[in-house]
Length: 239
Image (cartoon, rainbow, N blue to C red; front, side, top):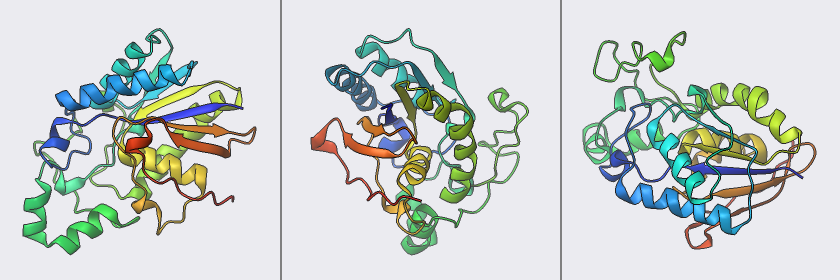
């Protein structure tokens, strides 16, 4: 049976500052670096030997992958980076402090933007500090102006189907180091989580989620390698 590990990046500097990050290329905090190294130690302790790794084009996910692979002595494995594994784009909320945003727009409205499945935040105005249209890592791509979890899944799922699933289907052990919402999209797909429930599925930073899959790439077992920081996994709802 193929093994899949989903690893959310360690704490970033903007996680620490309680700011909406999205596609902004923020680095790890010192705590985040430690979380990434600890993730690698957990991977090594579990005896996981990877054939392929995938990550986004954002530094916090890439460095988490590097540090985890270094700690597990697997830096040599092939790595593929793709923007479709990026965090959800937070639109006009990008860069704002979450507490100040709640004061400005009301906690209930901010909760809707953050935790609903298909209601995105207001769009990002073009030409501002966080306009990614000129960023060369997105050459040939039209960056979104905002995203909900639903539209995040709509860009993640084709990449899963075309790039990640074939590796697993070939029996390979795969590591995906990405972000809370891009990984939440994969969990929704694998476990068949209903739309109304997926926003409540939490994925802790720097804690590898090991999912054992059957030949049809359906989850057989799943567990976080650090049980002391584990979040509940969703019930499996087969399609």
